[in-house]
Image 1: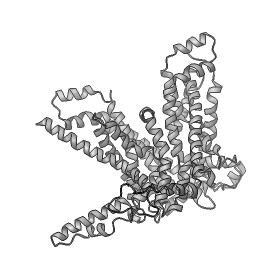
Image 2: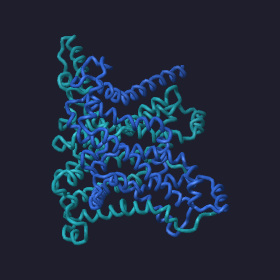
Image 3: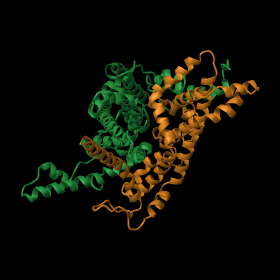
Length: 320
Length: 276
């Protein structure tokens, strides 16, 4: 048998149906909807679609919509802070865990616990962890502030305002416009480290040990080995991990929904959450506009992927 | 000297890693202890690690105030249904791509890989439109059927079938077995580890899914656990102990599945991201 030379209908059919009904078909519908003011209650046929056709109006509206602009900047804020933090911390953790010591497997498992927990559970848990009055984070900050205040008081000095603020109040996570996004990012990084670490670990374990032996023979210390062996050989993994984190970051939704609902005052409203609001959170729903947002987001992701791919040649070391 | 320095450095790294690991664990422990605390009791210093008396009424309340058991059942149907569908269609198509050849096969394979580039959020609105036309919103069909085609599953299974030795299948063919029989009796049993990997991965994905189930259901009874807790958590805004009881119950199945199948899960993640 080289192989069976015919079209395997029975084997392919389920996937083929799924492909047309739930992938290719929807993509086409989404694209068409983004050029209409079609209403969910209209029939889904050619007449209704051409009747509600508005051309590029939805896209023009995006250029004028202040909430969309805010959502865009919020998304960028989230991505530019959360992704580097996630990548940096998870790389450090992976480097530390890429060795043999008793209990290393258990520690690895600990880091993976948030990864397998649903985003809803993570969000609800962190809403409580970050509660400004009863949450453990602020209780700890307040307690630390009081200790520092007492320390200053011991010398008859009064502590700086920041310390006083920490001791008496602390950040108003999630309910304060300035602190809401940092709160979300804290939860996101906590939940995201494990998965990134796992990918880094896989990359590290692919590095041939003989490189290190050769480097050590040439007198390279641990630091030089890291810069000249580990980092270049790991750069394809860093590239991939960063790209995945960026793509995921642009599509943050669950944490926002659970922790802040986009508030306060749209301070955490991001593109995907705004899309959800437009399509499912208002009456009557604006499916056309929401579809246009979906394609805008897709355009960002696509441009990002292409740009990363181009930059890749500059800093990713590839084996000849 | 340098050996001693090395040992000190190792110890420092170990302590930092352990502290980080505890940071991962502590919120979960807090969740569990809080779920047993007296309703209405607030977190306070000094930290009360374990309540003196176990307050099971938190669990009783979360099970009666909302249709928690029904949500649990929905999540199980969703996760298991999705897993079954995904494994079935993915293995079938993967086998076809590995062992059959037909005109346009490469183009079809490429096309299915391209769908991996399309983010899920583009599909949400049209899928909702299609499902509501079919009258399937608020049914298990809407929750599960979109998993019928999954390029990742096809890709994973194809790679796996290609790596299997052909001799057994060829021998069976000479003995007069049909492709269908060969698939069922020989190839599929040999693919068990790959199926376990894919299955663990899909089960956890289904159990934790949020955006699509949020849109595809709208009655209280049809919500999966994640969506139910997210939508109705306002009922427990001040009842942290009750909410934590609900969260503890919701977090247990994925963690058990993960601990039991950690090997497969990790292989799936790394396969999907490094070779996908």
